[in-house]
Image 1 (spheres, one colour):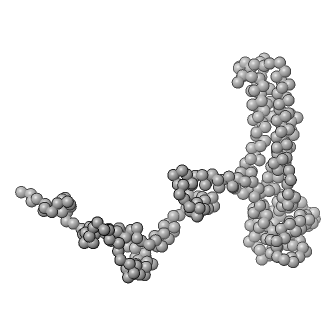
Image 2 (tube, helix red, strand yellow):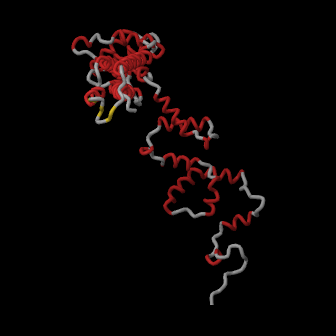
Image 3 (tube, one colour):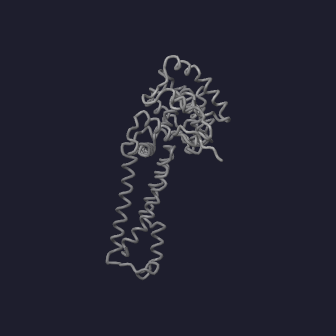
Length: 338
């Protein structure tokens, strides 16, 4: 813990990991744009090259605080050639990080991802250059996603729509550009279909990882008998549903209350009085389910347990007098008070 190499390398790691943090945050966003990932990736490459040739803030802080074998008053064990060993490990770490980014993002990268950057309004040029900007990228995307476009579409009509989109959306961010294009599909019939494909391309697998985490929270060891259909509905609600704080359960409760068979609560409706506050709701439920109750009354008989007589069931629903409730299991009358 007091080794010169260990402490200084930890300071270097703080600078090294701070370069990856923005890229990690972008890739973990709910809606991450391809152009945003590419821009963040380019900044990460530049920062790693800069860190390779000069020390970062934390490493500079270590160099400024290390004097006479001590760092902030703590003596560090500095062996011979410790600085040379640190330099070698530092160089190897940075080169490994650059190679990892290239393998992760640049290796066998489809050219269509590069073509999709044409929709980033930040990269659009100004002036007369905007008129011909992105034509080749739009045509390349149209040829690759030809199945998403109408058969026999005209490339000239597509380029005309692209020119009109650049005229109305050059000051809009990417999200608003996509929203307006999809909403005005009558104005951009070809380009709106192409835009719908672009916005569906996943940038990272963070959404899949969130789905696995949600499934592990739902299907626990105590809930192993959940069917695939129920798990699918619960996952759909957990992943794509609204937040708990914004959810209004009353419509779902009302739907379940009106569409349930009522058999589970038949004894409650038969024996317990309906509260005054629920008269309107009960009337609505009777109106909806009246025909069903009438049909069941004609075709079925109420189930009667074998160990009790029907008269005893009806007797349970009769309200007893207060003094009779004092002696529920005896046939004697309540004693009179003298």
